[in-house]
Length: 329
Ligand SMILES: Nc1ncnc2c1ncn2[C@@H]1O[C@H](COP(=O)(O)OP(=O)(O)OP(=O)(O)O)[C@@H](O)[C@H]1O
Ligand SMILES: [Mg+2]
Image 1 (tube, rainbow, N blue to C red):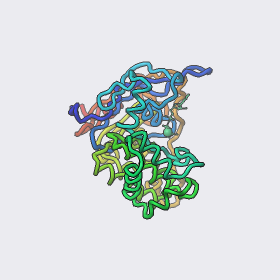
Image 2 (image 1 turned 60 degrees about the vertical axis):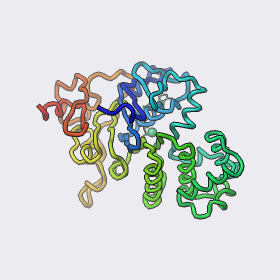
Image 3 (image 1 turned 90 degrees about the vertical axis):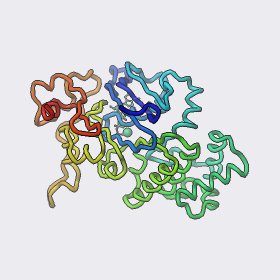
Image 4 (image 1 turned 135 degrees about the vertical axis):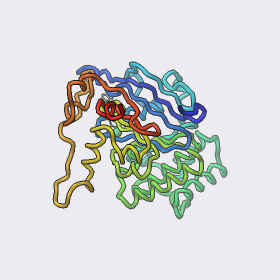
């Protein structure tokens, strides 16, 4: 059982849909995700598995009125995010939680210099202005190993490389010393070497402040290096969770196994890259049974009933699969 005082984010049994003209899209189907203080927690899964939608709800950043929460709860530092007013959310976003997105250009205003944008955020979230705000901005850039902060201050976003822009935004995300940073494919657009540097800086800064990170990626190799614990999502639900080494080293769910089998380094030389056969389920129909069963070579009649997450190993390693249930009997 987790120590409640150390829980930063607790998403419990979240069920969320998007009403559309073509019917409701059942995007999140009973997902539970917990992040403790200072932890790096990954969410992995194919495109459309609801990694982004679920993590955006940690900050309630989905457009109001466009979604319906059909069940479950979201608590950030003990606060009920689903019941908070928009005014409270603005405070919470600036103080307890910050977000880093995939494309830093969209998070920066292209027509304004980096320094002015940084000072604005620092004024808003830290109440600092003048010299104090500038000193903090320069320190944050220095922490992100930006060699000449003064010069970067005077530049426009397009004058910086992608890696540099992302470092500016990571520095800025830490400006309010949040308890949690949500990073959604934050390094996906960067080349491998830059990605490694940026992840190193992110980890170092988070460690020094005790900041937890919810790290969303479709890249299992990156997740394996960066995350302490993982949640594997499929069709809006968690199908496997546990310490990274356990989930990737001894996967208990056929979906996690299939994701690992599809990794390029598992392919024999000369063999074509494999992808998982079949496609993700149609989310306009409500899910019944195991959502992965139609693509699973080991599916049987029992999979018509939806399996719950059950322990398959030590340290909170759990999988939602009838096979895993048999294995521990
Ligand atoms: N505003 C919306 N209206 C309708 N459906 C939506 C909306 N936003 C997301 N969805 C649907 O919700 C599901 C989950 O989307 P989400 O973006 O969370 O997936 P993801 O796991 O982040 O995928 P990716 O790896 O491509 O980023 C998808 O089927 C998507 O089409
Ligand atoms: Mg996404």
